[in-house]
Image (cartoon, rainbow, N blue to C red):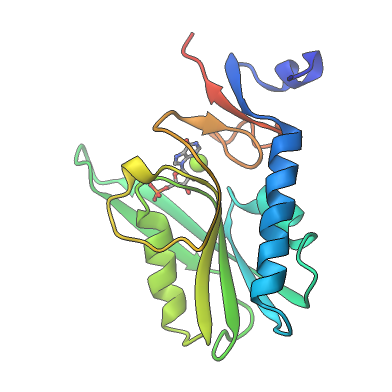
Length: 183
Ligand code: IMP
Ligand code: MG
């Protein structure tokens, strides 16, 4: 259950969706799976800022392999009143990915447009392999076909916050995932 201090961190009411223990258990399972799947390999873990930051920090500590970290930024903005959004990619890649085993980490996949854009960009670097891991997935919202190798939890279309995910830059520091409740 969220504590009184957790509630103070969030100005808006929320409903608990995934508690800390549930998240940590699942993150450990995914870390074990990745450790088995990439046995004897060195992984390059690429985080999509900012939403993946908390998940990535916990996940990489559950991967018992040599791991290198890179980060990229992706932001979407709406073109006027149209539903279509442009994804702005800003690569922060400091080392070549050519011939490397790359794992792209996101916090949440909604329309899947962000992750698709980042994948296309990373593919150009000619990695030996490229897979996706996301803490949360909203499969009903996908608007492009995307193969997600590792997924923490499937959620509905509700807007969720916490554990790295924001609403207007707030709530990323909540240690659990909640659903915002309209006031
Ligand atoms: P996309 O629609 O898959 O391109 O997702 C774009 C971005 O929207 C994600 O990386 C998140 O930053 C954000 N996003 C989508 N759904 C949620 C949500 O429920 N909570 C917080 N951020 C979200
Ligand atoms: Mg956001």
